[in-house]
Length: 267
Image (cartoon, rainbow, N blue to C red; front, side, top):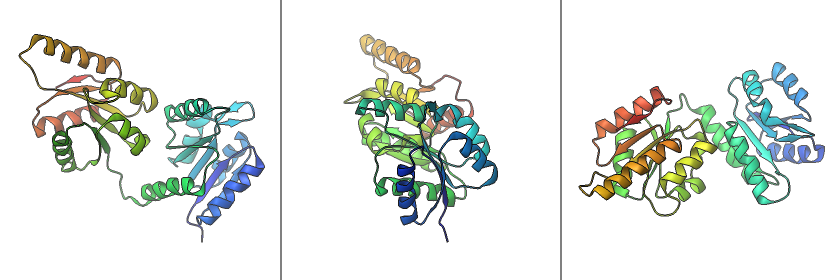
């Protein structure tokens, strides 16, 4: 008995067959489609557990049809694959477009069976979870702050991931499935200001709270912090929070941002 069914959109029949064989080894059955019309027809008559869609089918861009596919598939996870054309930067740009189109997973071609298995494992977690708790990522080079945020929000029922830097978060965390990022502004490496901009542009559904250092009596430092908070907001943060803060203030701010992500909240 099949563990699940994946709909594969791939206009290369050779690559489609290779993907189908990978899925069979993982215990999944495959529904192959070679153009967009075939996907629409399949979704009207079949139930699938995952869609694996190539970006470029002939001269057409699959990302333009993502909203229509989602309406027909009733929330089925979508993984987007692409070779992206020649060059690594082109592939990176194509997959970032897929993220902005709210793909649940992205994968570059060619890929190995282990890459597909990683997606299947995450899909199985989503399928078996009775109700998905909201996922919050905390980015701060201060272990004390991360521990406070994680402890406070875990008690509120949130799933928590942690990273010491923005670079670590991008490499290690599946941000496509993160509902909120709480990040410090001043950190080594990329830092929170630039990180907020990248997150906002690449994963627009995610809410963002920018954290700043505690108030200082030094007027220059006060101006620097105020300027940084303003920049964080301009880059896409939904709210700001000054350290140190009380756990109750953090919990209430997170609740407010989830309730109205379009509202700028200063805390």
